[in-house]
Length: 307
Image 1 (cartoon, helix red, strand yellow):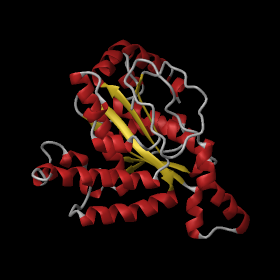
Image 2 (cartoon, rainbow, N blue to C red):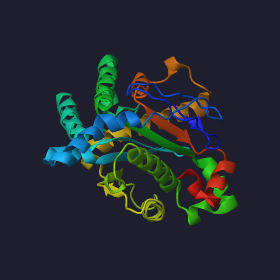
Image 3 (tube, rainbow, N blue to C red):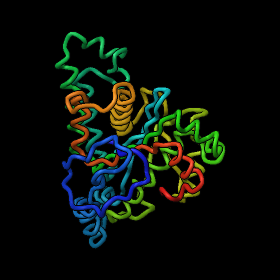
């Protein structure tokens, strides 16, 4: 699920299917390989783009040439996680229709994972029917799985980040933890999109607007420095979240909650992890923590080492 720290080197990616389970662990080193082979996605998405270039593009075919990632953050005071999904623009359009039907059928206007937590309104409304609650989340995970290429998460333990700030002033030099996580997920998504055959200018990144004081201007500046572009911020009001960011919220909440459980209880057995997260983990994803004060300080001194 997460590899702890960024001080490890990944082996060369091996071919993997869309449904390959990621290597999940919370260890201090990377065991195995969380990275899937981007060449799989060249055939799936970009082959249509090559055909389009030869014969001229209908509007729907142009969407094959656009690659988009959508991200949201989840924070509990001890941990922050920024997570999201990436897919072609055409797949996202199909996803929107299925996600809308899914929500409407269940009487929900917008998906926000906090509403399914212990104190959420849907948790209480469905409290006498846990099967409905579970089936609803599993169906949402299945819709995501049908349409995305991969997921990405980056997280930081805020206590470690605050200690690193005392040592290297990372908050003033780079920004709040949100902006660091945001940079790391987009750097990874950008590289995978380009290596998958998409032109850099056709790879776009969207975030739920974090609000004031959370790192929005700092992330915008980091984009200019590292990606030569600008992040797109969507309306941060919960009822206005785009459906793609609702899906990102699902992953961010599940990863952040599991990290919270890990900090409280230690390593978790498979059966202790939400079935919905186990289903999401059936989608290729690249999930890591920037963990350890020394690693955060090293990033502060040389942020390009991870981008």
